Length: 292
Image (tube, rainbow, N blue to C red; front, side, top):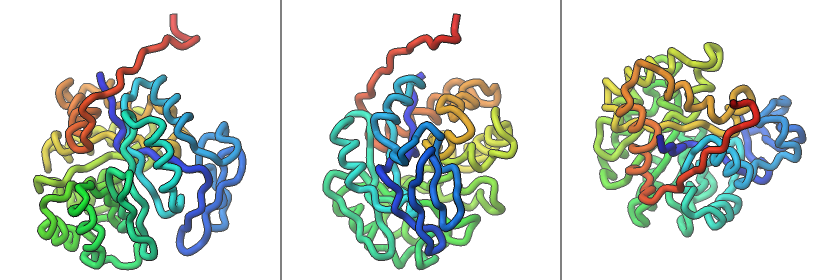
């Protein structure tokens, strides 16, 4: 089955913030996360760099044809890094431009714009209408991560009404483990809005693989907005601190709660349509040393 990852991250060095405090790469996959040392990536990312070559190696081994590289305020502005990645692997990546309260979005060379709405200064998303105006002008999509529950869904609906031509991907599966997450999923009843599941294994981390509650949530979301509006995302490399890249989608492949048609839509077809992947790279399976 063809696979497209709708939510990954890349950086050379983290230079972001969390709660107004700096986030900085250390060694051994660790970061200073606002004054607390956290395992940000797998420990083999020894120098703090989360590179395109390393991601492509993981994608090739796991059989993932393409990926969408998004951005986070906690990682800081990685526009230069993402442009380099897109230039190296133009058929494998789509990239999103960084924006925060002080940094207007760049457009040249980018496929979309990322709005970390839950970490921005204003809760009211109409304050960021200029981001969507820019997306409309240059034909870009917008990736949005909202505050938990329905805190921002009202103003998000107003933005959707004002910019019906802008494709919008709601991230983190609507923060599915938080109360009121279904309100974010209901946004995808609008024609131009989709949902991506980056971070779903993080949100169900305490349950762990094979994430039966995540499967039930995917089923519930499909009943709300239709399976044709849902897309798989891994949240690489942060989720790889506990699971392998393959495990981030294997629980979907192996479940009996979804049909093969639904799995294909969720794992590839919807993302190909939304992000414009029309000619996908074909990965060559390689038997690993443990297989007979």
